[in-house]
Image (tube, rainbow, N blue to C red; front, side):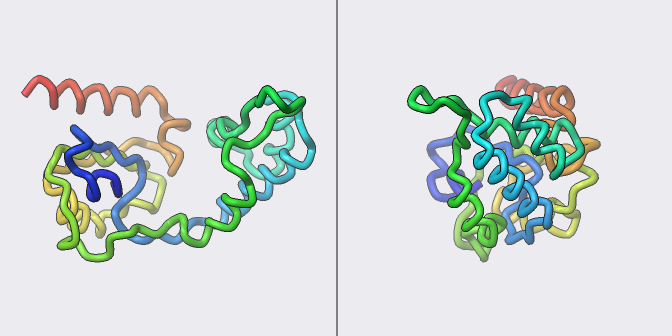
Length: 173
């Protein structure tokens, strides 16, 4: 969203997933996830399954664990898997991670097409922020998907269909 508002000419469309152009308080789960990733890092795991066993203590839902574990990568100079984003950086950024850099809709507007996908079991794109979305992104549409915040991991096919339909309709114009 920030790229669209800062440099609107760079994008043909924008598709935020369970995010809105407002400051949001992150749920306590995020701190828990960082702790789990820290434990994985400290254990110097060699496989995804080892990492998943550790992360199970912090998150029961397999789709969410799978999403979090996409941050785990193999580097050629390492004999174990490492986190793509340094855990220290992630941990120190948690308090600001839910912040949105634009506070007033008149600061910037993206006039291109925008598909806001929201998880119906998530609180991050509540109905009361829809007018604010419209001020920043006047050509927005909303697609609700039966999921929590981790829409792509929890409902990958529904997400894919929403995106394909949006893009197909957009480029058919």
